[in-house]
Image (cartoon, rainbow, N blue to C red; front, side, top):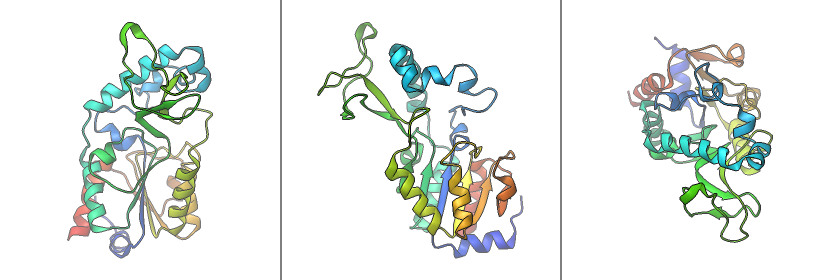
Length: 244
């Protein structure tokens, strides 16, 4: 794909670059997206596996599900897109990454300044007192992990359906979106709010908003520029542009 001169110039001149990543950026690492027909949510009811009600009704089922996902993520490696973004941060030292992903593959690739809108699946906390839990989650006889402080139930440190996003994460993301001069959205369907609203916010404040996605999304008609490629290929090309 040939990129327009305007797009290239915007990248080269950018002083405040923000990248918003979604599940599509991790799909190439073997982590299925939730909204594809063959994705993980197509096989399970998300309200049973990723909600407070589901956890309280059947915590063992929820833990089995998350252990399954953690095993996949622990064995996954950052793909070319993650690695290219890490290299981009060395060129654009003000680059901020906002991610909807909970897999921490950006950090595994060496990226800094990563804002996790939906938490992360690697760490855990107490459902009752909110304290971080550092103990084992795989216990004998399928026992559930308990909090060392209050004996409460331990849960994954992710944002479930019906829960609010961490206030600091969303406020920091909104501030970066407002201040950005180039805002890239990669691998997200732009369906899940408030994350999906960041692209519109950036555009409202004058940022040049670029969509990277092989498929059309809800935001496509509002994007200033569209790259119909997988994120790994697109970010490697963007890295080459900035290096040259």
